Length: 64
Image (cartoon, rainbow, N blue to C red):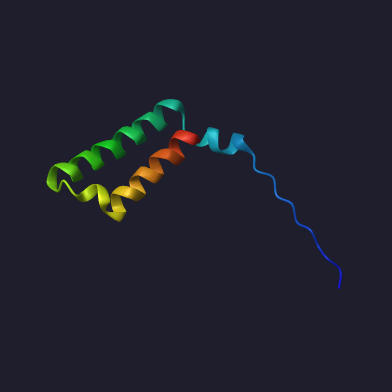
C-alpha cells in the first residue's frame, strides 16, 4: 500500500485580513463587557463554561 502525504499551509494573511485592528479591539471590548456583566450578576461566573469560552475567544482574537 502506497503512503500518501498531505501537507497544508496556513496563511497568516487570511487571519489578519478578516478584521482590522479597530474591529479586533471592539470585539475584545465587547467580550470584556459581557464578562464583566456576568461577574456583576454572579461573582462565581468566572468559573462557568461561557466565561471560559469568552476568555479563550479573546485570546484567539488577540492572536489573529
